[in-house]
Image 1: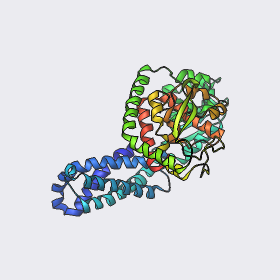
Image 2: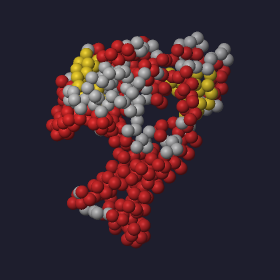
Image 3: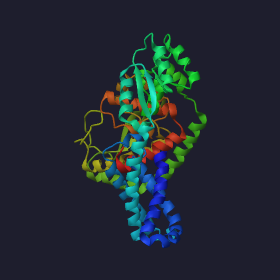
Image 4: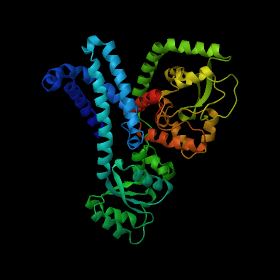
Length: 431
């Protein structure tokens, strides 16, 4: 949010700087009023492009590619701004050729300076010291992640891997030294002596956070290796009638509208598949849906007819895919027939991606895999916008952590965020 509001301020600052450079000190004020409203619409485009390029994700803040990404995002936003000004001159009332060029350069420079020189230096200094209690592979992963991402706002002041009889004195000492956040492993919360010591910290304004909850907030996935069945009973709500009915209504209306609008594109895609290689135009696949029920899912065929091979997704070039199929897959046009599945009720727009029947049988060996079937599967989902297609059982387990996160936190707002991230992935191929 700091970066977001800062970007809004710097875009208006870039506009003021542009007009100051272009018209000088005395003439700039009169022109600012003329440019204010049109450029406010343009700024919305810039903010959206910044989002598409991951510039509002903490994972991206420390990357060495920050300069290149900011410049590329500014060029894309600038090109879209030019298109809007010249295609809709009557609406905007301006055709700012030189002004727009100066603005693009000014906005790009200010954006980079803001995100690099201010953000990357501010957050490490404002890091909150925390105490971590407990030890596991995921705990080690979290500690290392916090150490390499100080802009998250946390600094591990101490890590007590195995509480000893002197545990109470240790946590009391750290609380006295200004540690106000304690992350404790879920299995240790009820351990003898640990709960009593942590309870005594509450009057000292120390926040006690279970490891699973903190891990979920940091990584936006559920640490399945660290939880038990009790966690699902306490945190997963299955029956949400208002949300389910409203989501179903949105699915039907939106899918019907898209079928009408995209029908010419679907016809062209079908013709391309038909003339490029022999075989059916539309494939019918048996997929696992809600409550473990099987349904038929439709996709445009992108492989050679009767191709055989592993069910796993192949990384890199797949020889089974036709040249036309490669283009169709890159543009995600092969998924368009699934709009019919959405209208039929087999799919929703947002939900865990349904797996092939054979893969679902293999994945059933994963712990808690049956949980992903308590909601309707989707055309895209939280796992799809955060993780690559799985090519092994281990990767499928990683994706399951994201699916369970969605099931626990599903809401119309989260569905909207997944839809926006899916748009970003469509245009930039970034997760």
